[in-house]
Amino acid sequence: MRITCLGTGSPESHAKRASSGYLVEIGDAKILLDCGGGVVSRLIEQGTKPSQITHLFFTHLHSDHMMDYGRLIHAAWDEEGAPIQVFGPAPIADITQKLFGRDGVFASDLTARTEFPGSQEIWQARGGTIPRAWPNPLVTEINAEFSISDGGWRLTSCVAPHAQPYLECMAFRLEAGGRRFVYSGDAGLCPEIEALCENADLLIHWCYRLSQETKYKTVMKFSPNAGEIAAMAQRTGVKKLRLTHIRAHMDKEEYHQQMQKEASAVFSGDFGIAEDLQCHDL
Image 1 (cartoon, rainbow, N blue to C red):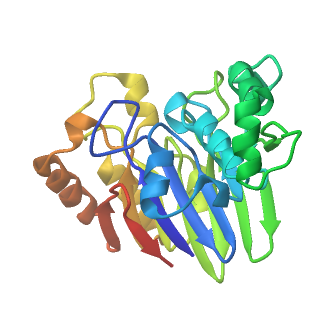
Image 2 (image 1 turned 135 degrees about the vertical axis):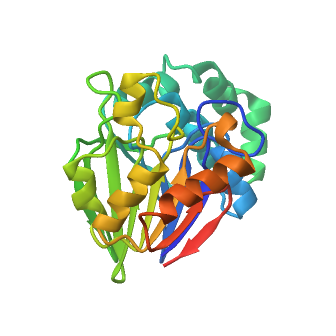
């Protein structure tokens, strides 16, 4: 199992970090967890084409976790890829229809690409046939506690306290070949997250605030700091922990060192800050 961090940032514009997205490669499966702004460019930089993605799982539907969804599906379609299997909470089916349906955002573009004679000629020159079908991702709406097994891997999920009741939010655990990878999505600490993290070989967990940032009660409740996340990782037997969703103001060496110190005080495993295009082989 290889995990590549494609986007380790937040909704804020940041040249160093795209928004949330992680590529998991297991055999022939190329699984994308979230698809925030900038993730498709990082995917291409990493060496994977959009058409090679087999599965896309959304933890939740905040824009910084799904802004590049339209780009991914459109690019995979233009590369003549097989329909991507898409899984996420409601209303992902409605969003997909509003993007790619006959009255969707891309309807005029897709009409031109499939019906304009010049576009048809280019499509045929590339080996395509007429009529050309529109993009058709295979969408399944899921809830927390969803699970799926496909060949040599299994994905399970749990609730992630974050933006309920406005959005359903989940964390994911992927297992293959005896290895365990957990991605928290955007998550406050809770018993369900702890259970999901049990004996994980790698945990990538969001860290949206520094320990001294205590002014806003709701942010504190749902945004654990580095030390709190590391203590949970220690309790659950996590071997390697990487913090992600790093905000621009936190992305300074002094704050990286602070988070390292707070985590090392309570966590005996391998700790670090996730970076775009960083790879982990399990």
